[in-house]
Length: 78
Ligand SMILES: [Zn+2]
Image (tube, rainbow, N blue to C red):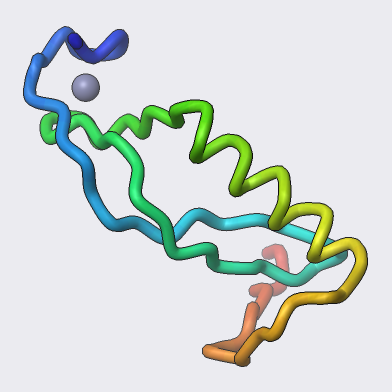
């Protein structure tokens, strides 16, 4: 498999945290996906897509156990 962005062929399974935004909150979803070692492009297989879909609906239903790890701070426009 080659990276469609940079044509590099070094693509490896890596542990990442995918971000899902919902009403101003950002949820970090730890998961394993294929990542290009050169440009960092992420490739989601069917299994990864399914996990993200499930997470999205669980976030909507508020049926996830979450822990606050930080705040989102917006800087005033100048
Ligand atoms: Zn790449």
